[in-house]
Length: 160
Image (cartoon, rainbow, N blue to C red; front, top):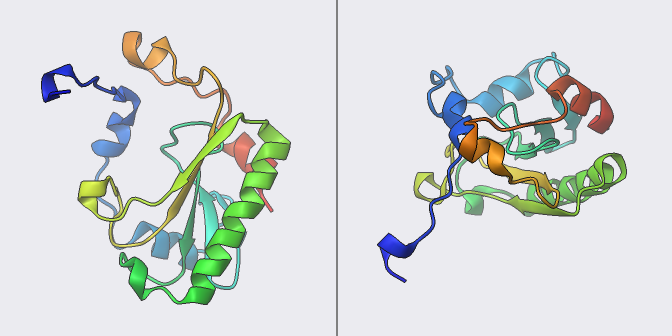
């Protein structure tokens, strides 16, 4: 298959994220340092890591798990921190499954800008619930992504 034969995946609803002004400092460090968990959609705080809703979600319930340690290098993270991050992923897969009944999940990290990291200086794991048919005609035809639940509602359902 050559480049001309590849399908293009359009995600026009992401333009708000792409064109948003860059925040001062690290968004994860800033949110972790704040005590306003509800305002910042922080769902859980552990000893080494925390979970928060993505405010530019691909799907309802899209959340991220980040260490308090500020680094974009996976090899800099202590094993105990990685273990807590993975435990937190497991807890939220269970919570999202109970609350939202998705048919699947995309879970992973984008390491470096070339790999798709929007925030490349602070590691984080994405947990994205998926439903059959959640990619439909609206983003392509209507230039819109339909999310059937507000961030506030998802926050109250998923908070640990």
